Amino acid sequence: MIDRYTTPEMARLWAPETKFAAWLDIELLACEAQAKLGIVPVEVAERLRRTAKVGTPARIDEIERTATQHDVVAFLRSVGEQTGEDAKYLHLGLGSSDVVDTALSVLMVRAAALLLAEVKTVADALARLAAAHRHTLMAGRTHGMHAEPTTFGLKAALWFDEIRRDADRLERARTGVAVGKISGEVGTYAHLDPSIEAHVCHQLGLTPARVSSQILQRDRHAEYLAAVAITGGTLEKIATEIRSLARTEIREVEEPFLAGQTGSSAMPHKRNPIICERITGLARILRGYAQAALEDQALWGERDITHSSVERIAIPGGTGLLHYMLRRMAFVLDGLRVYSDRMRANLELTGGLVFSHRVLLALIARGLTREQAYRIVQDASMAAVEGGASFREGLRRGGHFGDAELDGLFDYAHYLQHVGTILERVGIPAAAGARR
View 1 (cartoon, rainbow, N blue to C red):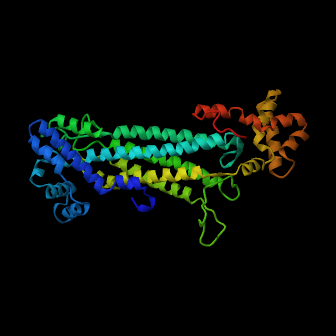
View 2: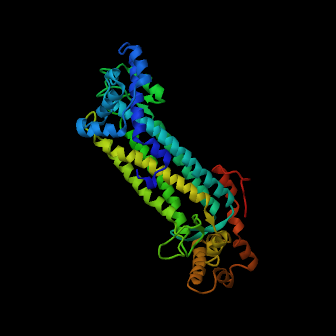
View 3: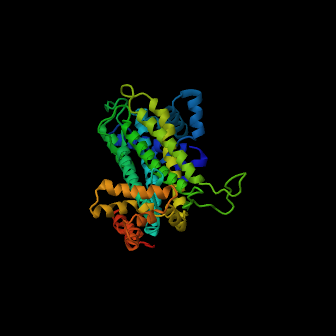
């Protein structure tokens, strides 16, 4: 995590102080459960809850660097320094991963909650765009070329529906990782009663893993970071389209450009889509984190620590980047400049070629074969593209249609007739800000 791409909320969540506080809470919960079983004196467990403290991250790092070469042992020593004799009752029967993995699950659940809240902000912004521009005509494009008329509202609705699927994936990933384990070195509960795990997990809002080894299995973490990466891919998809539509030759949309903002050090006229470009680049990092998490699934025996170094970077980094990307995308969407007149002008650049399919169907309805109709429409289209008569004029001169019939075929309203149905199907009410 670097400050440039980190939100304050995620920075606090993944701060060392937060992690060590979670570790201490797990140790205290386990101690309290052991007190109920008579393993630890009840008064000691109560006193530890009141007095136990952890040293500063700097002190823990110092102990690890100069002595233990093990972060959990360094953490426990720092607790002993701060707490005194009672600290010997902590970590009885526990393995390091009981603490580390369970705490990581807690933090990942919290991170998912932050992400889901920000996803909703993006979804709300897209819903507003879809509603406001339900009838804002523009050229639909396939292969980067004009296809048929569509609306900017439908484009926004497509993004809206996808970001909601991302929310579903993140919610499933949050549920998948909301598990803990206090089962010992290889998951056999050799030195721990399963009731200790049940108590710890219940207090933390987690479900005990049905079976574990020394660790929780990393398919859960892989699924989580895959959901993060896929959500980043949706943001990249939106950002890429905004960048494309913002090009000088097209200029149908523009991301917000603030007063005093500089687009280029050398060219004062530039208003570059820098936020969307940034989102596009960061999505590549998220995919790299997801790939690394997939590699973490296969570990030696009950566990090695090849996953550990990956996760120290990928999980805080991935959730932190996505939170930042979501927040920036919400800013772009809320302030997006939509140039509807430019959309209409671009739609009409080809002189009606966007109506070719409707003309084709009209000829077939007259009794022509598809091949005959296709040849007539393609010939008129190619003549228009190559500088001859306009598409409409070519059809009229060919004697295939009169002016009145062409007026009906070249009517944009035909392409708007089901827009309301589509928007309602994705959850955008018909009355929500419709305009032409």
